Structures are given as C-alpha cells and as structure tokens.
Image 1 (tube, rainbow, N blue to C red):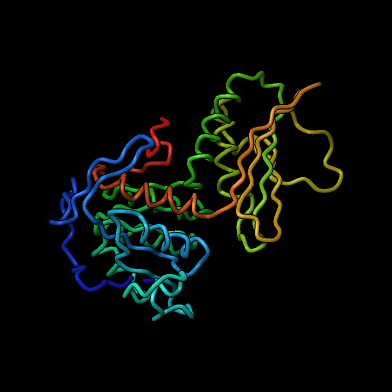
Image 2 (cartoon, rainbow, N blue to C red; image 1 turned 120 degrees about the horizontal axis):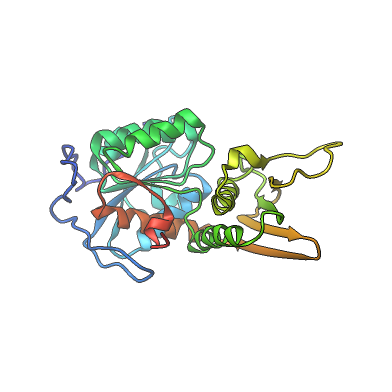
Length: 306
C-alpha cells in the first residue's frame, strides 16, 4: 500500500529531528483532559475505507484545527478514486482516496493508521524517512513487524496503542494497580467480545490488559498467559492469566478483567458502543505528537496517566 496530496498541501523535505512545523501549521501544546488550541494541521489517514477509517474521517473533519490531508487504501480497494467525504457519508471534501502512502507521509503533519500489520510495518519506515508523527492503532503485529515500529521511533514520534479510548486506558491503569495490591493467589481472567469480522484474537486491548496485570505482579505475561482452553485441560494453573475471546454480531468492543478468589470476585469492565471514542483518541494523539521528540509513546503518555 503506498496517500494522496490534496490541493494546497505541497510535499516538503524531511525536517530535522526536532521537527519544527511548516509555516501555517504550528500546533499549540495539547495536554491534560482539556481542549486543544492550534492552527490548522493536515492529518493523513491510512485504512480509510474500514469501520475505523470512516469514523476517523468524521472525527478529523469535525475537530477544530484539523484538516484531512489525504486518504489511503490498498491498491485493490474498490474505494480508490472515491471522495473520502462521500465515503464517510459527509459532503464532498475534495480528497480522492489513493494508494500512494509515500506522498501522504511526505506531506502530512501527522498520519493515523488502522489497517493491517504488514502495511503498518512498511509505513513505519515511511514515517521514519520523513520524520512524520505517526499514530498506530493497528493490532496483531508479529515480533518482526513490532521491531520495525520500534526502529522507526528512533527518528519519528510515534504513538502506538492497542486502544485509543480514555476509558480503556484508565482500565489499563486500574488493572495494573489492582493486580499489584491483591495477593498473587487471586486468579486473573480477561474476557473480550468483538464483532464477527475482527481478525486477531485475543484483541490487542485484551493483551494490553494482560500485560498491565502482569506488570502489577512484576512478572512477564508471555510466561504466564493462558490463551486457550479446550478439552481435558486439568485444573487451572496457579498464577496464570487467562484469556477468552468472543466474536459475534457488530459488537464494537467489550473488555473485562476478573480477579477471583475464594468467596469473592472483583470485575473491572469497559464497554464501547461507538468507534468514535477510538477515533477521538487517535486524533488527540496526532495533535499531541506535534511537539514531541522522536520516540515511542502510548496513550497513557497522551493522557498524562504515566
């Protein structure tokens, strides 16, 4: 997959590492939980025709100070050539959907991507080459693809998060805290539900919750994760963190963390009813990155939860 440059959005050479913003696109600091005040910035979008892509087009075009700079899809997408606004049920935006990600990363003030793991790893290299702030919501990256993102963060400011919502990131912080407080004898189970079309399981958010719980207990998740039970599995292994992935219908995303002991149970849950919460978080991250040095950040950084 390789975004469109809209009229008035000219390609620019790669800026130095501190990445001062081009004239007319200088963003003010974005922090806390309040509003942001900035000159208009151009945000590019990769994976624009999917569910999250449509939500992001709506969010970018309705966020003060933001403009959709370009919209990219895979080379065989039936959405190619369509107006991004019309695709999202809006008025025409004058932004035709393209497959040219190189031009998008060379011209946009920030790029947001929710797509495939393979695409994201390749585009991380473009972000590094052009030192373009890059927001990644893609999940399911393998170790090699994850390493490509980390390498790109040496020269580009990147927010990479399995979930962009404020509520889920609070859930992550609470999960780590509760796991640290409770005796290790408490069992931990993570249950998630998503729509029938989701490709990866457990979800990236469920795995992030598992990592948060493991961090609270000061152990490595990979050593204690139980990601599937079927048949005569025997008794539950003490200290393991279990996962259950449910798929069906059009569920946007439900996540629960259960802490279970003899005679009592604690449940921490988050249920999403709209993808707008993820889109809003991604746009917020793109704005937050405007004054950040190269590095790999998460939504807890964006929200000030670290």
